[in-house]
Length: 222
Image (cartoon, rainbow, N blue to C red):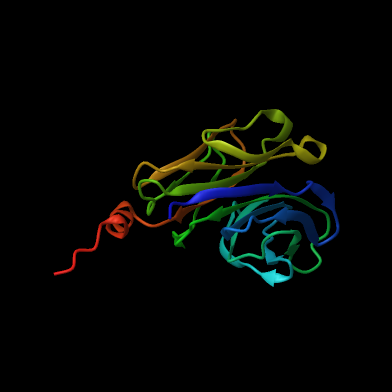
């Protein structure tokens, strides 16, 4: 079975002293993978301590910070509950003071595995992250938190999942996207001005073409 996109969702970006970001996502009946893309901005390094869907814990694949303000993460959940809207709850660690948080999610059907999540950070224009273990036909999911804010715009090179342009007092850009890989070393990238940023990406994999072909071959009995 080939990988297919089920549906997407996003949080309403916030700036406050709370610790949770909550929004609803509805997985279709055939969905078997949920990818959650939370980001947080605060002076210093801060991570999410937990992410749940319908109270079921997701697994953190990567937390990529730029060491000063921006952190972008990817979380994954196999076989999420389907058929109804359930809440995703992303919780940051401890009592961090005022944070700026944004997030999106995307669910898939036909997933057999996920690749190794990778991240990158910098202060240069046009952020990017290279997914070394991508293969032809993989869905590459990526997300970016940039401090560019109102100083410039951020445009995805792939297909947008969701963006918060100049969110929270014009201070940050959040952008999540997906693309279909044409082989190894797929590059997830954005057009943006130079400022601090953190990005993360992961390849979502289904049955290979060889496996699908073998499953469709007629069985010969001697």
